Image (cartoon, rainbow, N blue to C red; front, side, top):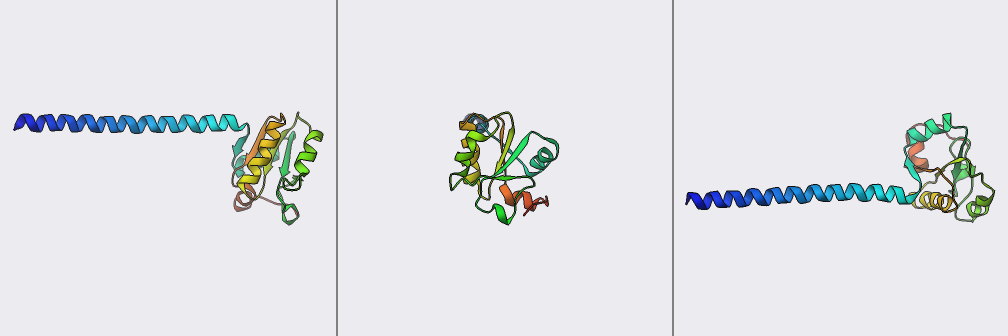
Amino acid sequence: MKKTILILFVLALIALTGCQTYETEMEDKSIVEDEMMEETAGYVDISAMEAKEMIDTNDNLVVIDVSPHYDKGHLPGAVHYYLGDGSLDAAIPTLDKSKDYLVYCHVDSVAIAGAEKLVDAGFDPVYRLEGNYGGWVDAGYPIEQ
């Protein structure tokens, strides 16, 4: 009887160790996949705080609003190249590739598409504002109208 209990205990211990190892391997795999996604995206997501610091200190930065709502409020100094009407596509050949670019919108999908267009055209570095315009406003940073 004691042997049976000991065998069951050892098997349970092995099973639990195996589960923990599998869980750790899956977490490691997830981290690697996230890093690969960031590397292949070609642009860097930055927080509102990082964007504010960049706007305040980087004279080489061009801030691009790709939303249709530019006239309702935008980040200080932002230029407007609305993605939906082709303005960004038309502007890309005229943009200076030696500049740094920060792209934002009111929704992730449009900001991501805008950042990817710049990356695909050979611009580097390209940044995308996490949380977009709403994240900027929620952080209490100034806007222009």
